[in-house]
Image 1: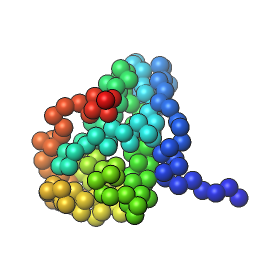
Image 2: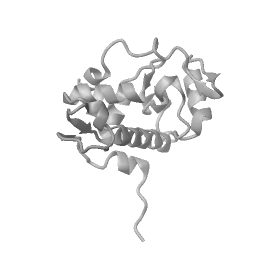
Image 3: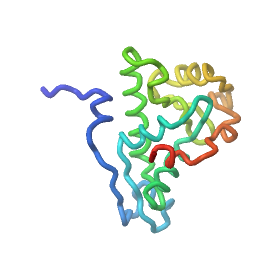
Image 4: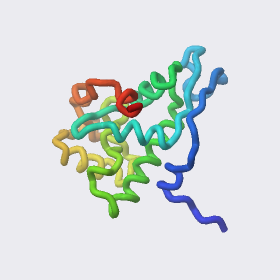
Length: 167
């Protein structure tokens, strides 16, 4: 039986981003792209963008997708693969937590769901994400019984993150 890959091995798989020039009707991103092209990013590229986030800065998954689309000059970034690659980056960071100082880890906890909600699918669920955010001075409160960051829009980076990662 084949050995199961670690999250770090998935992250460093060598997969490259590619452009889908014509999105099939019904595919994720089809309506959003409105006839434009879509980028299917890579785990390493998503990880690199998240690593540019500074303490206290917050983005949503949609912000991350928009940065990827701008970087590749296309209409949209694939919603499904971007979410999967973000989760890979989070799991890989947690695999490295025992051997790397916290400041060297990919700060996955700084990426929220739409509306500022915490993501229960991250390692450790919303409890772990909330603890990491609060350690950076980000206040988390319940909204419709789910933990959320109310001021996430004010905490977005002032400069485009796709330009930070390019340099």
